[in-house]
Length: 165
Image 1 (spheres, rainbow, N blue to C red):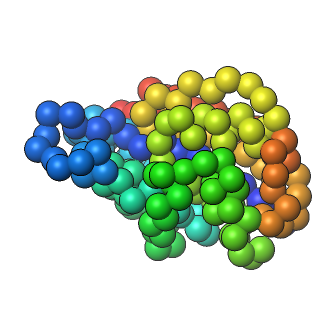
Image 2: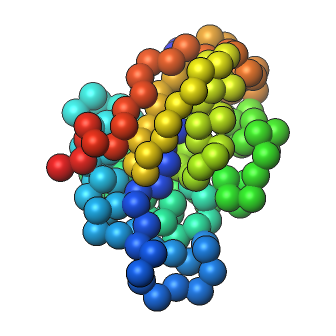
């Protein structure tokens, strides 16, 4: 069974909205539209997420929610601090902890790790993740626990402009 890893950067945040710390910054209306557009893009391709993990930052949590709703996904959204205060090793742990029964894992978070993780997993390359951009990779291994650097094939990389209405 092929394993798909999707990495999604949160939608555009609203810097003018009242918020406390960085983790409390909400999505801008453009970010909401982009997240819904990403979900529609995934639904049109009949991509079903078995596990969705988001950063605890409000903009990432909300992006994950709008994507899941627009894609018609029923999986609950897990919140994991390793997707906010992170290292590539932490992100690798999130991936390797995924059940072998999961066919599609979606990670929703921030720069710089969304670009760094995509590059690491496919064995190199520079990826410019604007807000709501996403990548999809196919693992060359049978289980998530064996996912490691350069163990994926890039299926696609989509800038937000393609899926944003």
